[in-house]
Image 1 (spheres, rainbow over the protein chains, first blue to last red):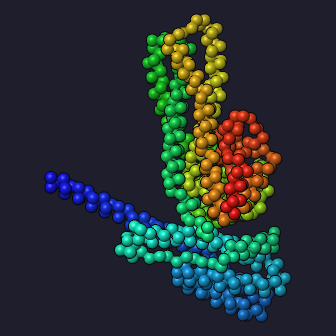
Image 2 (cartoon, each protein chain N blue to C red; image 1 turned 60 degrees about the horizontal axis):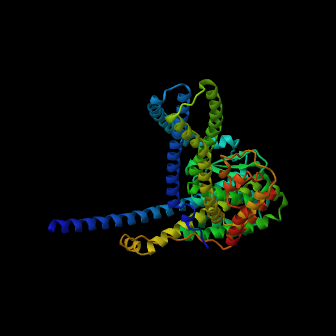
Length: 193
Length: 321
């Protein structure tokens, strides 16, 4: 009789452990997916930042008086490179987007620059990166949402608290971010072809 | 609907379901093929003059050989199917330099869906259409026709490719590609066998003069029944596959590109295009984003329609927008 009771107790405990371990593993997997998705954004942000010096040099060759604009762009770039975490990177990236918009507005006054091959190539590449950031952001945020939901709902919230899983930040952008990207691209393509 | 949850693109239980269905279909194929091969063997032995008393034993031996042969074919099929589909469709692979816009669109969508970049192919055909194939999420292929590149705007192209990426993400491609090859082989075998049987019956009448009776006739009947039902089975199988799958890929594709209206526009353009897609045939029809064999609106084609009506798909997409 005692053996049966013991067996049942051991069985229940084993089941419980199994169940909890599964829950823990799902949380880990989910968090790893967020990290992986972040590297997708990070790659594009780095690509973007690395183009900036070249872009500034190219524009400076034609429009050296626009110092303020250059400074704004360069400052936004270094903020982006030093950003910690998704939220901060997003703010810096939005700043860089704004600064670049100013720069491209300034370029409108320099038709020779606008027609220069290497400038057009840079512009095309930047709009391609912007599109890729938008898609990477979409994937990242979807993963963050799924992970954050998981660590906040019963029953996995108990495991999450026990092993201090923390909510991840979203990579937020200005609401019209995606629309701008499309406009940018078509402008770039029209110039390019 | 601010964000598209990750699960909508990579639906894990859909992946499992597709893996299971692929196995079931492969098993079904092995049974069917073994049945057909056995029938061939038995008919041949019968006309070759094997006595009724030995016929059962011969059938068993033929059956075992047929099962081994069918299994070997199934394994080969599993690995070669994507290449076969692309070859039959006359697709050629393109690089980023050759098709920068298409390539970039696919690149962006694979970033957006977290999938590995598939290989990109173009089919030189004026009719706008697109397909995805492959046996694995990591070894996938997308192919578009020249007509699609010429006739669609960029946002529409993006939406079509998003639909295809969804097929990749939930592993529809594995199942649909296997089905394409099974249907192709079944149609081929049925075609050959039907001729063979008629020819054989004629030869037999003139050679032996009198009926064999007993087991021989029964086996012959079974063989003919097998031959007749195999294309029907294939048709039903393919129909069951494709319809719900297209709705699903439409909705997750629309979420991925965030532009259901663009997908609706693209589908309308593809459906209204007067060019027939010559690269498609009955075996590969279900792989395409919209039914490529329109215009041949026979009763059988409607019965075995591979795609849900475009009007309905467009209506659902417009409701999402």
